[in-house]
Image (cartoon, rainbow, N blue to C red; front, side, top):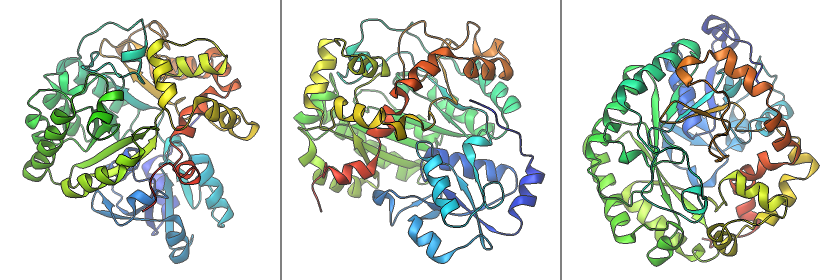
Length: 425
């Protein structure tokens, strides 16, 4: 349910007082929070994140600390928290309350300040056909094409006018953004409107992406599923040598044009590639990238729902299931537990705007034609979109089955530690 009362910057200033502001969650929602704070005359003092892979690093020039470090040195009199984490905002809020903090007085949830998180899929095409992704395991697809920079600017103007606490625009979902020849201009437009931009690429393609880095995107994710031949199994159609060469180019372009850009090397853990982790970590250290990881998921949620219902999936999806380290059946046990099923949906306040301005019902369901509204994004009011989401019987059914928590389980780093999914250093 989207029901978020607007907090004016003036009221926010009163709530915070003279306390130092810390952002809990050092990924792109955290960067969005920092941007929104800066836009309204506030400055963050640092980040908090429980991910061990981020300790000793920084984001946007601010140090990242563990929650235990924060609570050992700060209290409600000296610090104010804004929770930016998406998957675990409710869990983090409970930690804050247990530590003696009061919601709306000592901490806020960024996701409750903005109305939506905007995913603008500027490319309706991908160069790969990965077996874990609907691009490689689905029979039906949405129309192929690209969003122009002119249309994109109209989208941004509408978002900024209607949802002023928006801080970042995600320029991808099921498409490969580097295939859009106007991406550099799209990034520049995003910057001009005081927003940050997030790009995710498979980097296994032959394009000149230096102009994109020169345009200064905020955050750049590289999708990876192993070293050498292992990479090519699940990044189906990709070539390891090309991928590795482009990683090195990206590092060089970052140093030359945009040292502040945050590069996240995102490793998907399968049964066959777990031992590749040390080599990938060494590569990331060499290139100046932040290594993140998660259990490899079976996408989209259409396939998860089929497995939950014991229905057959495609041959490509079955190949994915065979090599997963965290099986869908294990995910199902957790996602459908009473405790997990009752937790909120991370995707409920996300809007996936397709390149042709259709609004998909959910960024993780893929079925063509499954749209939130019939109108295009530019023809819809914010109230119409909120009403459509709040009245969605599809969302109710998804949550009732626990499907909405499946990808939160896949992304749980604590589960990676429990299962010893990566070689212990």
